[in-house]
Image (cartoon, rainbow, N blue to C red; front, side, top):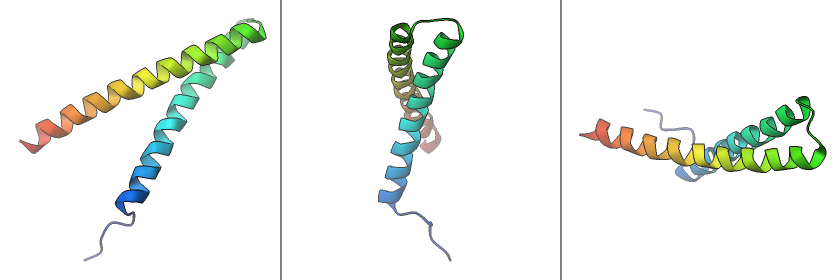
Length: 75
């Protein structure tokens, strides 16, 4: 039988990169929307920072929900 193609360490690295990419995507989209709406560059920078914070909060929430879901599945 063939085992998993990724080691646990590789899986953790890939998961971390995916999470960081998601947070960066949310942050950059906030800045781009602000620029499209006519914001000045400092306002767009603030929108990027707020987007990064929102993306981090969303990832924390999704991690919490995922842990709860896995715990329920194991019962």
